Length: 560
Image 1 (tube, rainbow, N blue to C red):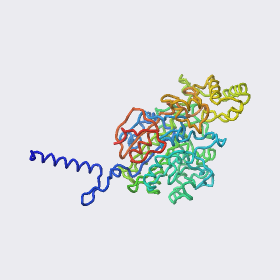
Image 2: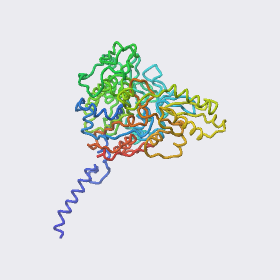
Image 3: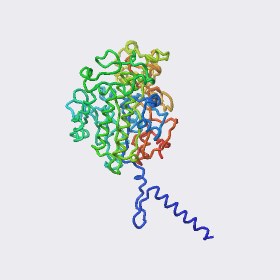
Image 4: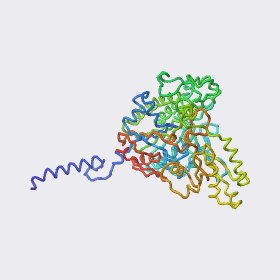
C-alpha cells in the first residue's frame, strides 16, 4: 500500500513546489517563505495610456489595409480588442472623455461635465482645467494656468502613486492642456502640453513644478517643432486612399489663406495667417511631435527603469483638430491615421528598447468619436441636418416672455442644458419641477429637438438603458442644468463643414479600446464594454485600489 503511494506523494510535492514557483513565492536560504512576489511577477515596469482624440472605432477597420504591421495591427494581433466599446454618458467631449477613461466613472461622479460649463455658484462659465491659483511654466502667456482641481475624484494614476508611496512616477503629455492635466490626476509628477503661436514649446503649470526640467528645455531648444514647418502631403499615393471621399469637397473646411481644401497643404505659406505653430496642431505633424516628446520623456523622466510601476499618459490631439476641420470622410483624416500608425510604431519600438518588450502594459482608446458631416449624409438621403439656432432662440424667447413675463428665468444655456434661475422662479411663486416640465414641453415642439429631460427626472429616476441612461450618467446634481436637450439623430449645432461630437448618439459613443503587453490576454470580444471599465481593468492588473469614484468593472477577458 505505502509502496504504491510513494510516487503519488512525490508528484504532489513537485506540483506544489511548481505552483509556488509559478506564483512567485520568494524563499529565504533556509526555505522559509518570506514574501509573495506575485505582484512583482505580473506588474509591468510601465503602464502607457493612449487616448486618440475623436477616434471612431471604424477607423481601425476602414484604414486597415494601409496600416503597417508595427502600429495598430500589432496592438490588435498581439493584444486584446474590445470591438463594442462605448461611452456611457453625454456630453461626449474631450474634458469629460479623458477624465472618464482615467477615473473609471462618469461626469455624474467626477464632475467634469464638459470642456466648459456654467458654474451655478460662481455665475459664470468655467473651463475644465483652468486654475488662476497657479502660473505658467515655460511660457509668458496664461496657457499654463491649469490644474486638475475641478476633478472631484481620483484617477488610476493617482491610485498607482498612492499604492507605491509616491515612488511610481506619473507623466502626462498632450497637445491640449486638458488632455494632459486630467489623465495625470491630482498627484502627477508632471503634465506637459504644447503652446503654439510664435513659441512652439512644451509647457506646464506651477501646480507641478517651478521650472521645466533640463530635458524639456533641451527638447524645446532643439527646434524639433520647427522641423514640422513643411508642406503636408499624403504619406502614400493619394489615389490609393479609396477608403475616404474626394480630395476637394464642399464638406471640408479651409486653413486661412487656402482657396480649396486640397493636398498639399503648404504650411510655410500658411504659417503667419494660421497662428504660426498652432497650424501644426491641425495636421498629422502634431501627433508626430507628441510621439517625439513622449519618446524623449522615457529617458528624460527615467520611466520604467525599475520594478516600481510608472505611468505614461499620452493623448494624440491632432486627430480631433483635423476631424473638426475636414470631416471624418476626408482624405486628410485618412492620411492622419496612416501617419499616426507610423508614430505608434515608433513609440512601441522605443518602449521595446528602453523598457523591455514584455515589461510594459498599454491601452489605447479615444475620448469620444464623431459624426459624418451632416451635409454629406443629407446629400446621400440619410436623415441629417443642422440646428437652426436663431429660429429656436427667437421662438423660445417669445415663449418665456409670454409664459413668465421675463427671459431672466433662464440664466444660461451650455452643453445642450438650460440653467434656470431658482430665485426668480420662487419669487414668481412657482415650483422648480413644474417650470422644468413646462419649458421641456415647449422645447419638444421645436423641429430640431428629439428629446427633453428635466433635472427632476434625473433626480427621481434610475435609468438603466438607452438615451436617458447615458444622460443620467452625465448629469451631476451640483453642476448640471435643469433641462437636458437631445437633438435629432444626425442633427448638429455646428458649421456646415467638418465633423463634430458631443451627443449621446452611437456615432459619438463607439470608440476603440485595445489592451496590449504584460498581463494582457490575446483575443477580442464583441460584448459591450464601457469607457468606465478601463481604469478598473488596469487597476486589477496592477493589484491596486480602484479610483475612489469608480463605477466600472474589470474586463476579465482582457487579463491573463
